[in-house]
Image (cartoon, rainbow, N blue to C red; front, top):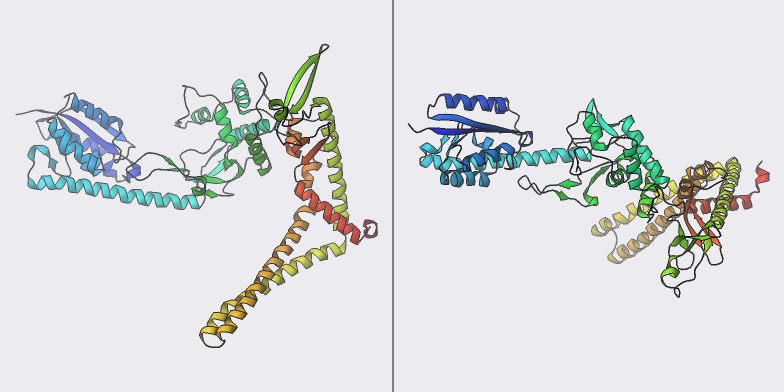
Length: 543
């Protein structure tokens, strides 16, 4: 009697829909052991079971171990519960069973399928490709259903990832919903605050490492999560500039769920393909935000600005990325000189530095610049506060509320007028088709009503802009006004104040500067509105 030295192999994967109790690893092992016990020519020498690996991918640890054992002639028989446990991709599975194993003299047994290469006949040769094709089809159908199910969840803003983003955890009562993790969320807020204050991503990472703050991966591991990442390069991961940058760019901290950024071509090809942003599934307000829109946008703006940190410094200079030449609009570079035992800092046009004929120096000392900008910021803040007082006085006028209501009513009337004209225009063809109006009248009426609709649409747009201007820019204590009021009158400047209040600073030859403040459009609209309302009715009359 010829002895066969067997490798017992099994596999289980939820991804393939393997949920039947009889497919469990234990049941596969018990079935194979029982079968071998009933056949004295079979001797079990090795076994391996891949738990959590799809049948369409043959890059499985124990599957590769089995192949090595076959090639090294440690075993001459492979035994599985059924063909689907061996693999669900019919071409690749057939290549192993029909070509490789026979070439190496290896017997293959699939117990529940009644397939044994030691007893092949005509019907058996038909069973194998047919069974493998069924398994492949089953896997394809399962893949389509799983993808469709996940897409529905993504569109509904449900979280389907294995691990929540740093700063969040899965809701214990609903694993598809994110809740704030207070400890990690504080670190996220600190990262944004330090970036806004002028620190580089690398400096932030270095400081977090110095303070002993666990990196996102180490934090997950400390919570008992079996988390793996392609970014890991050491046994214990540390904070890096890349990790900080990913946090600063992730809209999940705004309460936005962005999913579907990556995919695979199909269930057979596991190569990851990155989708363009317009194909991502993005749903807002799915969970509590950790960072305000103001801070997130500000950090994003600073990330786009060239604000390299000077050697040996953790933070950029306060004016970095904000200064530009008033004439050529090029950047301004900071230089340091030493004279008579003292240190002097000044800024000059970068264009002039590279080509003296292209632009003039536009030199200005840092001390003079700081003083001028400080005075300009304080003056603008005082103006905003005074403007807010004027808006409050205007808002107290009874007629002012009536004016806003009139605008709103006029807007609604225009919308109703537009709908009526559109209905008439759209009914013209029906009346023409029924012979109620002539061809010439049809074209003439259509031209007239199309023109009327366009005029009403323009009127609606103008009224809406007027109402928006009044409500958004001209309301007392609007968010943009509060933004300036919170800083009050400053005694010194720092990076955070500058980036929160200033868009850019233009430096002209001779030392003159022009400050472009944030919310410039809202400020201009409010000034125009207050001026017009004051001219219409002086403020003292309203008191």
